[in-house]
Image (cartoon, rainbow, N blue to C red):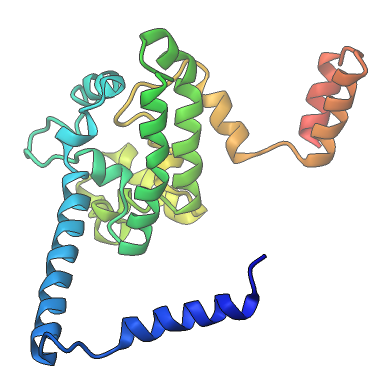
Length: 234
């Protein structure tokens, strides 16, 4: 049985050894070496992050071929000005803290790629609405942050925009809308039931109403259409 005192002594010896002055290298050599190693580590880390932001990296997975084909049919890929937005411009934040968080979360995509979650057209289409809802929810939560890296109301000249565009942008300002509230499907094909699902995302059913419908389902009691509609409207 381990003695707690022995464990504390062991940790203390390790701590003392770590901070003990070296007898083989000068202080200057140790500091310079640590500084250079730090630069190499930081440079390698930064290079890895930037390499994983490239379009080639993003579409290197087989399951991303569908995304790539759809993206290449949009104005974000091919347009009159030649200015392009690649995958990371829309899906990876610029700010360091948000970028690292996004990279950590993206590790799950590697797992799903390995198990083949969307490796066929049928699987991809079956999950399209779920993937879209994840992105919509995130963009509504951060006020379409990545869109605003390139598009900002304060720098738009409404006088040279199409009448409908300028009118909708002004409505967006007046009503506090965010980009994704109007611009779904700008880079990827929308599912057939996208509008219904997006409205649900904007106006979720209250917990009490949802609970009532769920209890009816558990009790095997069919909910009349008017009951459902009435519950959703409350």
